Image 1 (cartoon, one colour):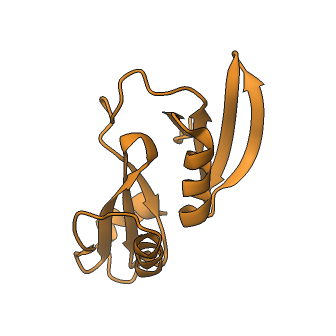
Image 2 (spheres, rainbow, N blue to C red):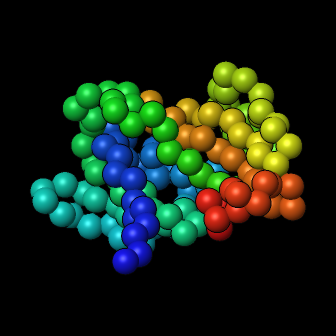
Length: 132
């Protein structure tokens, strides 16, 4: 049996702002925008993953029981520079662990994203499958 994470579901207090954020910084592509279960639902592809936005303000603002979700990039410096130039406030600079660089990024509705880049030529062999 094969399993994979299909999507992260996010309640959006301003669905258009959320869509703009993920399109602008992570090249999200809308694959479905429809009225489902009485509200606008938008599915967006971000690389091989998906985000499902539900046009309803969060019942419990903040991250709740989810700490963050990860978005992998091949040019973390470029994405971070773009975010800074557009006014995104970051708490600290990129952490560089040699084979893995990361930064925690705030997104709309107090969602926290771990933006990361992996150098597969330096990663310990035991971790290779995790980043494929």
